[in-house]
Length: 316
Image (cartoon, rainbow, N blue to C red; front, side, top):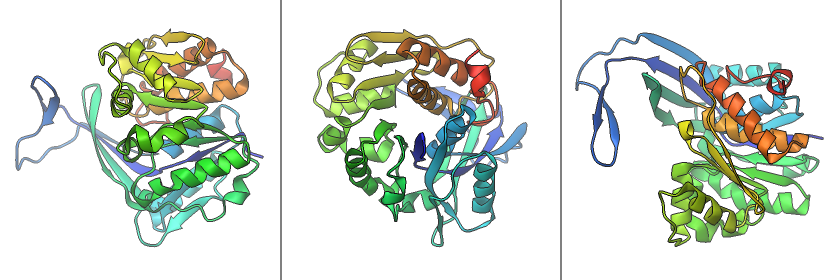
C-alpha cells in the first residue's frame, strides 16, 4: 500500500552559474543574452537530479509518506545513478522503466543572479510506459506531473484506472497537457482532487476555456480555475505567494522570506508539500503555510530537492 505514487519525469540536472549574461527587456518579455561565439567560464557548477516525479517523490519520502515513482530513465550510467539515489531515499523503484532507445533526460540550467534559464532534453521521459497498472491499485493517491512526448497519451488511462480503484489525484499538468486546452482536459479536471498550476499556466488554461476574467486579477483566475472542476485549485505566483480555492473559501499565502540561491523546484516543493499536508489531514491554511516554508527552504539551496525539509522540521 502506497500513500502516494508520483508519475512523470526524472532528469539529470546541471546548474551553471554565471554573471556574464546580459538582461534585455522589452514590453512583453525579459531575455538573458550572451555574446555570440563567446566562451563562458562558470563561477560555479552543481550536479544533481530533478524532474517533476523525482522532485515530488523525494519530498513525499522526506515527509514520511510511503511513496513510489513511475518514470522512465535510460539504461546508461546516469539512469543507474538515479535508480540508486531513489532506492537510498526509501522510494519504491519497481515501476521505473529503463529505456533502451533514449538516454536519461537532461536539464541544463543557466543561473544568473536569482533566476534561471532552463534547457531541457526530454529523452527517456518521452517514452514512459506503464505496463501493469494493476500493481498500483492499492495506492491511495497519484501525483501526476508533466508527461511529455508519447507519455502524455497515458493521461486517460491513468484517470480511468484511478476512478475504478478510488485513487485520489493531485495533478500538476505539463505544457503538453495544457496545450491540448480545456475541451480536451475537461473530463480529467472534474476528476482531479488537487490541481496545481503556476500563474502563467492557470491563465493559459482559463483562456482556453473561453473565460473573460481579468487576467491581471489572480483571484478571478482562481475562481474560474476552480469552476473547471477540481475539488481544490492551487495557483503559485513565485515571490508573490500562492492562492488556493476549495469552493468554500479563497486562501492566500505570502512567500516566506529566504535567501534565494536558485528558484528551481520551488513550485514542485509547494505543490507536493501542500498535497502531503492534505493527506496528513492538515487544514488548507496550515497546508499552505507548510508548503511555503518548504519552498522557501528549497530556494535557499542549489537544485530542486537539496533544501527539502524532513517531516519533523516542517511541522515544527
